[in-house]
Length: 74
Image 1 (cartoon, rainbow, N blue to C red):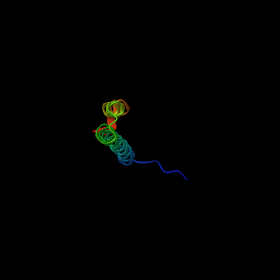
Image 2 (cartoon, rainbow, N blue to C red):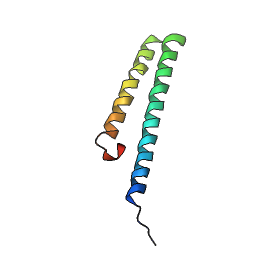
Image 3 (cartoon, rainbow, N blue to C red):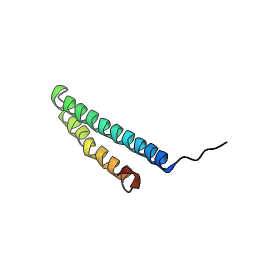
Image 4 (cartoon, helix red, strand yellow):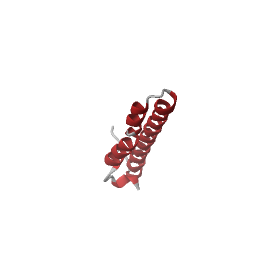
């Protein structure tokens, strides 16, 4: 027997997925930032550090693209 989910339950699960995606993207951007600082200052590989540092806004842009236009994120 199948049960239909209520609107509140569907909205709650959609918010949980969106929050999980946001958390994963913020974690990935922060990890990229830490890696770029390590490469630039500790490993003394300035070119690689700058390259990895460019990933941070790219990851945030990907998140904005994936989450744009969703009505359930309010």
